[in-house]
Image (cartoon, rainbow, N blue to C red; front, side, top):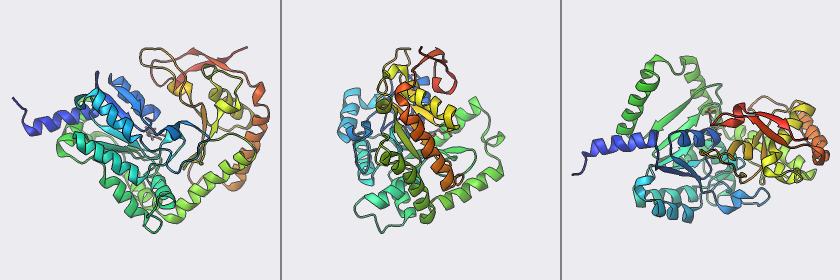
Length: 364
Ligand SMILES: Cc1ncc(COP(=O)(O)O)c(C=O)c1O
């Protein structure tokens, strides 16, 4: 006998929130914490970004796009029952801060509709994504950013959001669900694991900062300045012959440590080696996005990640051009000595999200 429709929707809500063993979530590329949460529930996190998005030097206007053929084949092969939802990360942080086109999002939506699946955005950088659509997607040059954002959002059934990113706030985030039964399931889970929704969460001042940040982040002058200042850093490094993910992403420049430190094997962690050197030489705090972050699987085995990158993420409204010029000088200095940088091995690590707390030593 079929279940009552409301109960069916509530069960779908639970599968969205805690997918569990036997389930798989496709995404263009899962961000690290998103991946870890999927895997911690026992489900599999599957990355299906287009081929261009897997090669740092290949130029493509929307390198964050989902491979639509691969997505459909995956759903058919695994079976719809095993796929609680499809996610798209805008912009694609672990793939180089690369945007996703509206044409591609519509393609994902059409596949989701064909198989009755919800589509969620990991929307941390929705405004930067909208800016790239305005700049690069045919037909959008004269559209206002809020309109483009609405068009992106209208394609989705839900979103996850870290307010530290495109809500320009210092803390917080949210899960938005366009379905009352799913929201009910989320609230019930919250009561079970944390407390009633009004017990904690964000203070009033933080909510107001988020509301103001959301107004400011879609301002075209702000977005032009933001994206241009990231490109300024990236272009200077590319001009100096330093391999970077191209085109330059929205919120960060991604150094291609795999190419720059080609004397190291991926599992000697070239990205970690470069990140350590940048910090030691110039106090520049970047982040490895490579085999330290993504190389270890839930069963403990280890394989190289797709790319070995170091992300130089640029905080909003913090640095001046002279700060960035200093970063350029330090990166150039370290890059000239890259061939002498040692590899690393891991001395101790937790089972999940090891890049936050693992301890390393150099390989002699
Ligand atoms: C796409 C994406 N999703 C999720 C997160 C995690 O956000 P938080 O640190 O607020 O949990 C990030 C952080 O950089 C991100 O870029």
